[in-house]
Length: 110
Image 1 (cartoon, helix red, strand yellow):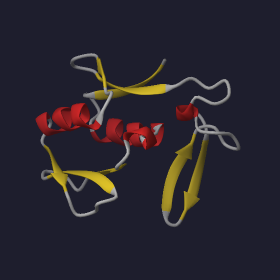
Image 2 (cartoon, rainbow, N blue to C red):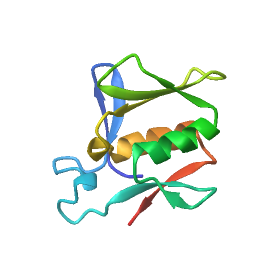
Image 3 (cartoon, rainbow, N blue to C red):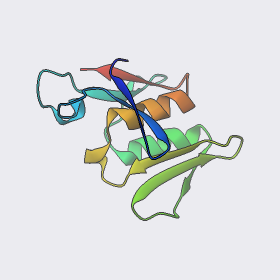
Image 4 (cartoon, one colour):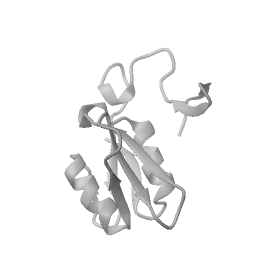
């Protein structure tokens, strides 16, 4: 994981390509990143696939915010918040999922 940590509005996030377009968008020389479910070695290609994997790990869907897909695990204080549009699913969202599910997901360059 490389890049610059940015603190803005009380939130710290990793900017992987500071000053440039998102690596996820395919611009520049950056590699595209994908989220992989490690148990099945399956690349997450849609929110429906991701939701099934998260449900199997005990995550429950929240429907409070129409702009976001949110998941909560009752046994923790963790909340996963994702943009409603899968095309806006970026590496920072992937790393959030990996950190909260250490042995179940990983981010890979393709």
